[in-house]
Length: 306
Image (cartoon, rainbow, N blue to C red; front, side):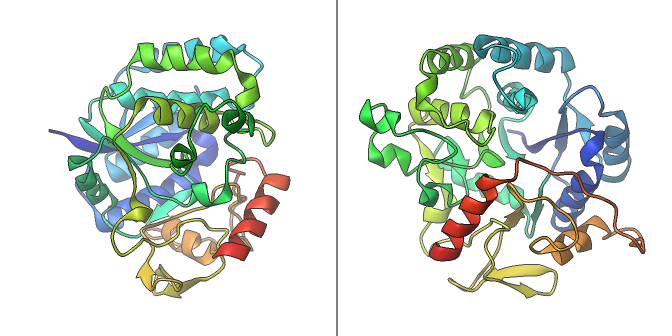
């Protein structure tokens, strides 16, 4: 059985990709990592990640392109704000029997691949508190009114920047049929903040995968992971969740622009320049996801809850 990590990136997120890979390799020098190109402009980042971290490119680029275009066309070419996010669905068909997918706006604080040990008792893993925010940015109240999902199902909503599963758990036919079903009921989904893959993939997992587990529900609880949470305490080059006294497994800047002055910038900067001199002037870091009212809502909610 093979295990590995998938990421998506292009040249535009070079700095984020380096920070992520520095953090992974700080705790794990062996786990194979495969890059799924986000678009056609990936050659520079691919070369850097291969040279410094042994990252390989997904072996069938034509398949990625065909898969993502087919899924996009079901809704129409102009429907999604960022249709290339669906390229990460190639994870289901890649070389790894068990895999972890990570967005590049993440750094990890442990040998993160060990989380896959939980797959001995389930088929799909997530590791976040997305469900505490309700259904916003995933579904609309129509899924409740039409009894599409039970309330217990909606407690399993997850952020699509960190998830793990088994190869071929989802087939191409599953993807196609799910997208067609979703396209027939756009009223079920909250795309108001320009999310693209998260509503559809949550729908698919809740519908098709029964043996799923959120690691924050493990015995003894689990730390938070969102960079919008202000209560994390720095301990060396890691963070501690003071609410439960546990070290973070990873930190995710979902919806937050990574730049000087952003939450936990010093942590990100540490991992970005872990193996090279830090420049006197920090480079401009690209925005990873849509800002605006989305981040304001998330901040308000988590500052109240955490």
